[in-house]
Length: 439
Image (cartoon, rainbow, N blue to C red; front, top):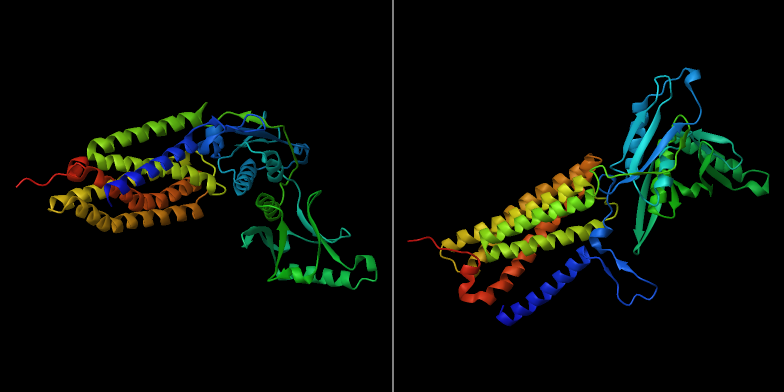
């Protein structure tokens, strides 16, 4: 690569990095916006933050009917676990549920703190729903309850770039037979107005689903219910699979909750991470000279791409565990670059030219780096599949970071090095802080 091509490519990459940096971190008024003032909020501002960093809302669940006279005891821990599982299923990984009562003779009430969202009010109603699941026909006759239901889960199917969302219900053999008999009974009815069988699914007094049904819709002991969007489908699957609470609770209006990590937690976390990255960049430049500067640009590019991925990957909500995952991935990137830089120094000491030393170093380092990254990627995947809550959020951000780290280390940084060499020519050893062993 000659000097002119290097300068041209470096200019293009610099412009791209500057544009990405502005889009990632800056907030500004969009010029020429006709319908009033429009503020661009940056990629960083578009990242969804969890309750511990941004704050959220709290709801009080109070027992509607006093049950102390009936002599029944409520197990608060059982209800807390149930509520937390349901919130987690809807994506509220950092939610907190606590039980309390003013006197020992009072019934337990529950406080639910969760991330604020447009769907929070609907979701808390879903989570605290009351009643039992019942499958009925169009005339209100009960066919069976949840005892004939094996599972209810969300599934999706993408055809020609169009994604359809479903709730898949799996029934027992007996449940399937009851449905088929009900369909046959409706088809053979003398009343011409009711030859089509209607299936209704209710939770207490709430109707969750109602639609005509034929045997063609039943396959492999299962039924697919079409939904308008993913959120609605997941909410319906949760309601059908878990049913309602044993008792009915009144839900208070939403109360504002300060961030779990304190006031201004999000901004303080950002500045703390920013300071840590600056320290890393300065240390790299001091220790490795030009190679450290190239590594710093690679680290900066990695951070911007990680933030963009947090927006592009659906369902990612950033909490403090996720921030730790990002910083761990930053350290992994720095460590990978350090492996390469040490290898370059070693190859140069063995009387190779600068270009040959760099080429050999990247070639011999790729296996070691990929081994580490593959192990960590598998670890992140297993953690995401097995763990819940904060651990799963760490696994997501760290897993994304591992993949980005491998790509940026092996390709982007190498491209920058080869573009920088023609600019220094005979002084490239000094630029990269390379020295041969004294003889």
